[in-house]
Length: 239
Image (spheres, rainbow, N blue to C red):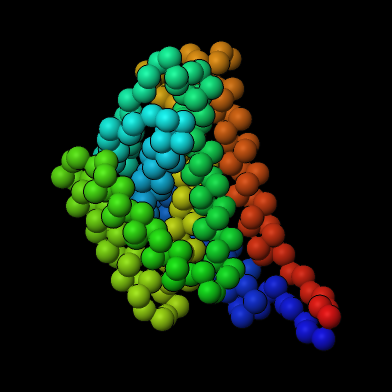
């Protein structure tokens, strides 16, 4: 007979109180003056996740990714080329939705991995490799190349060491990416010009605010569900 406790550090990798502490700290830093400066590397990472989700969706639908742009202000843009006869409305809508929805799913995955100590270093190593690979394939600007490679080097360095830093780094990445997936959507409600929600409106119909709200609800459900499952205290006997 073996008893599993989901609330202990051995079972979950991080106590529930610590997880919510990270959530609160990162949320406050996103709101207070100069707080975003401290979170700048994490914000760049979240932008990279968003744009990489667009790029991977475009590849999956048969398009050719031309470039992945991460700007100093943490905005981004992914460009791709496609054959209009083979790349229909459905494919373009999937690519447009992949940024916010994909970022929320990645955030949920990172937060779930925080509970599994054996995944901490492999996940960070995989992220470092992904940063380096996408930079080599698609990034064309000096800022993007330097910024993303520095992120890759930092994550790779943490992944190479056996320490609690891997756990905390993964938690910070997950929380910031989660907040980015949800809070960044607010700009879609008043933004003018080209953006993901406007693209969906042009392709499928319905106002941009509808798509922004839909992505917001989907992201909040995925991230909130992961946080609640990860911090719920459960116990039981496994035979």
